[in-house]
Length: 134
Image (tube, rainbow, N blue to C red; front, side):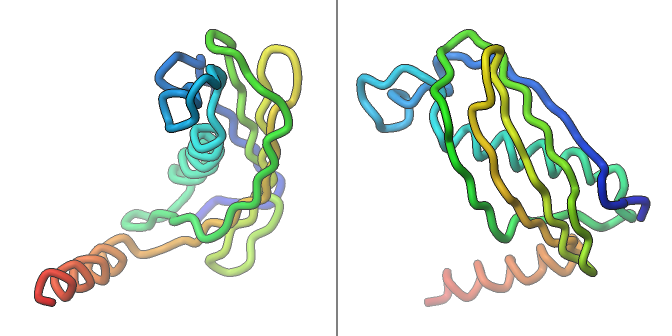
């Protein structure tokens, strides 16, 4: 594993109507919706660390505390920057910021946990089988 504290990962997206709040249950609010900002923040962290993990490893989100600071109109580009601030065993802590073309629109602290994907999927499969049997 070649991860180290201080690494940064960046991704950009163009906001379309599909990411608008009014398409996600908040009528008459035609700007980027908060759940999509959260999704993009997680995706920047996930995509950034994956190439640095051992074969068979992945990460899962465990906590995310986000503040949505400003609205972003449809059509603008959003840049998300995830900084790996702490590594504590399997726990990875990120400070993530999102910016549109005008200003910072959101910030968060996010924790991901490194998992063995085979064991993770086996556990989820046992849970699904148990739920179907009930």
